[in-house]
Image: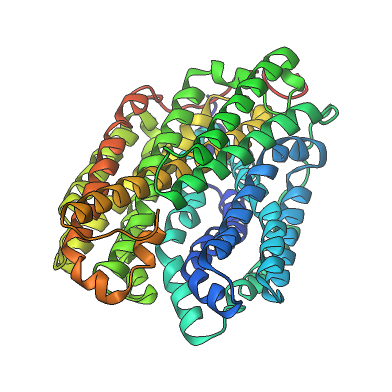
Length: 505
């Protein structure tokens, strides 16, 4: 390796840092938006005169739109370039946000959330493609640490912002707040993002693959959302969707193997052992850790009686832990490989999750803050190094097709994790209430959120015990991460050879 290349690999140059910050400016509104809307869901349903089950479609409609458009992102980037696709995605998200703020009924709001999701779904894979190409394989760990800021801090500080907006303004502002951020993101993208990135021969869009893959993702994500709302996987109304989604993915796999590089996402990417290990790890990280992010604010609000704003502030130590860990984990990943960094992060995540299995109605906030800080260290040391490891061995031309794959895997994992932990929580709660002769009302997370405050105060010890049980389930799922993590590369990657899996190859 020549000295200039070595020097370049030592640190992120200004161009890469600026590119990463431009991408973060666009991503942060998308990640924050999800948690803000969750906080405001009850307020929106009351003011628009809709039931909570109907209002839940504000979240579900957005999620399905994201699943619909993720597979399209790779082809669009190869056809039009990263910069135009990124700008279009931000504009579409902003337009959807403005329309949501002007909604006159629950039906119009749900429809406008779908528009918003079509833009939001392309931003994460698009952002990963941009930063991966800008940094190169030798600096992916540090570059991904920049990208991890909104992904890990959004679920922590989103409830704080959502609580402030709901408490001091009208619900319209949970969407309007995105518009100036989007305007800033577009201006910065026009000014600073590098152009180009189109493939020489992107080929025609794989229509059959798009229908199979997007349709399967939508069906699968809808089935998982129903599992969360119904608190279990045993209903045929849940199983039918999950089976149909799984069958669709199997059909797409057969289609991709037959079509080869011309398919929307070439499944032969999984012949790269590090990409496969990274993908499996990302999936399990999303299942175990992001699912847990749903339980923490719910515990503070239902068991401890805190408002959305206070619950968000109590989650801040986890975000601070992630902020401390991400830069260090990124540098270490580039120097020694993710195979050394991620297992340490998993141990930290386990140390920060185990005490949550012993939650009570009077657990010290100081103790919880220390535990969450350690858990944040684990989150920051696992997520983005895993992404870096998945991309590091790929031909740069294959990145645009790999990014939607990883985004889809992460989205499915997060939805599955939420469904599994909500199921563990509510079924344990129902069992304990029934054993004490107390009737359980409702299903899924609604069983807890719709519980009258007086009843909630009475059953608080049982509720706290159920949260502890759910966190033990999260602990077990986190421990399972160690198996694929040990298969991640244990050496820095400096160069990438040509790959037959790249588009246009």
